[in-house]
Length: 590
Image (cartoon, rainbow, N blue to C red):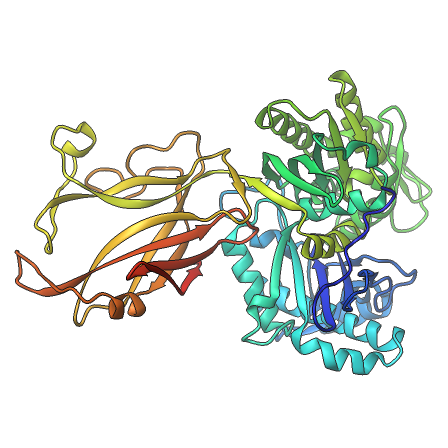
């Protein structure tokens, strides 16, 4: 299996699909023009505006002026003339903004400080502006590179799909914000939200690794591997079992993990070192430290491999200062100091790998290491050193795999290789239960009289839908039955909140007695809103409340929730004369 052969496209007409991998430090994009009966071919954007040397990745950076208008994107922000213009006009640079979208439960590693956003600009606006920039480059590439490219774009753009990548730790709320930013940035129109799809960077990277042919021997039926994607911002780790080889089918064998400990943390540690080392010197200013850190990123950071050897980082000028370890404009950095920059990230990688083996029943003995940080010789050597001690093989296919995630995202969309995932947390809902004074959990809670049936009820109970570590097939729906009373003038909709519990074992109740506050560990993942009008119209039997005398209908229906896909989806159903009908249910995020 030197390369996964994609199936011929079975659609009735041509379609354009593009993938955008927004990274913390660098981004990439790929696309595919699907043609009926033809095996799909992936194209990458291999050159971006103002790149001195053509490269498939582009810096995730934007210059904004004082009014919040974008003035330069990507490699344009590295151009000397543009930098001078930015300095003269007070433009501000937006960097590492992707990490500002992180969920609250994912704290930054201690000591990592994100750059401030430019004035009058939000994270969501930066995403929108960068999406707009990337789409423009895809349009230009197709228009220039394909015969009749302009007509191809004009014909296929209105219905094109976009596959956006996210770290393992991003959830529905982050996807929702990215979708809204994609619409605002013009990837799709306001009615085209369904043409925005999401895949985790780890899944996309694994499919790319499989496509290279470099890990063929590991992708055998019944085999188990762990994918470790070491990116600029996050370390994403997931275990997989191979259930079929041709076509390739995979299942998660361990819950996906995410650590905010990527390559930017190494740079941040180095920056703090330079600030301390060069204090009270001619380089003790913000511009110099920034340039020195950039030089570190471009050279020493990439080349460092041995703590026994000294590294050198270029400063401004060509002078020497033996007291500071500066020789002909280069700062000497001892190998042990260099190793210290990498240590927090390497510790996070190894901790995550240990967790993956434990969660997966210690089945896997192979690790596929990808991502920009994984291309560091030192990171690779330390992870390999750890692996050798436990008989674990490490592979880093195709070097730095700069286009791995973008191409892998297209493969994910076309081939649907992942058939099941593992629940990272407990998922459930808050329910009410009949009051039982013999139950000590209820004895300390307030019972409320139900105005329709006259029963004493207790609110705040926990009803689990999916337990942490449970295997979830992609197409599987979790169902709950509901009996909801509605009077003539009652709202014809119903909302249920899907909760997540991030700790080991959830309590019997969501809320603390007498406070209404949630126990630590509970968070609202999303809300599912059900349109009850069709159910109301189908329910003919009226009832009368023994408490208030109000006439009402008891609406009986089910809510179906799919948690095995990369996005949460829902629908409703009810039965009319033995026939099941399905209705709308929308998923909303706060």
